[in-house]
Length: 296
Image (tube, rainbow, N blue to C red; front, side, top):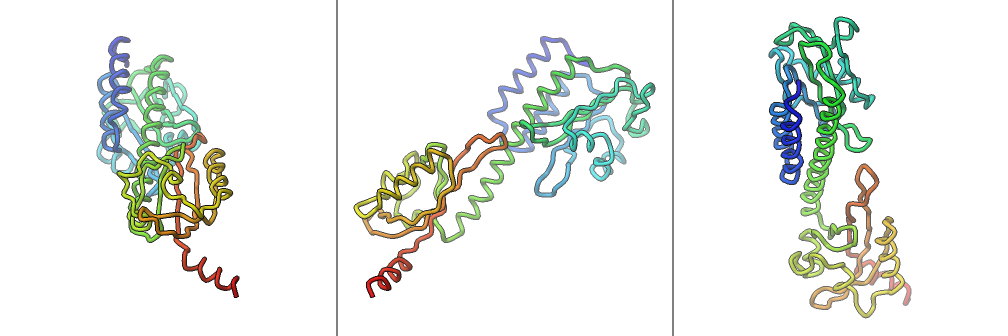
């Protein structure tokens, strides 16, 4: 089933090296199909990834199946072994379907009689993102080394797919943020600015290229900015906590204004901090009215 050890290592090395340039779902599917084709002799393949937008497993490529099977694969996937593996997160291997009577694929749907079947979950940590299924006409077609190698590939695929999903969601949020009136800041784990929307530029008069890599406090705070509030903001960043506060800031031309800031930490599926998203709503008029009421 597998090519020589040297060939497999070479293909895995190429796959790992390509990880940095795999940025789209199309790229990912092509690379997986490529490595399976080059590193292994696989007669039948079905590769699914969960689409959160459509809330279902989608077939991204297959090999050795009839057109009728391909057409119905996604509709029947939850009732077959791929569905079991996706929901349980456990590998499913049938060394010989004739002995164990556990055949999941009808031989009429394949180019040859199926004797061995292997289904592996595509994971990122504990999160299950898809299923890789392979089948062969020979019994006992997959040994421990084959399964370990394919499991490694599935883990790499899970990590890359999770990255693609997060990028897609961040891009979607960025497009929404670009159109709304509140100022939006996306910063890294240290609180250093990575992206701001147009509303932030209108409010502060600072463009992204002027402030990227800086913390907002380096250029927005001034004489009437409350040090206690600044401390609360720094502690929220340090402790990776959510915070909502009102603060006085200053624009590039030193116009004073009030904003209500919401800082939200964003974590990945393993609990690691990825970045912070800050939503800033200008409340200068509200504060002026509040002060007039206080003054009587």
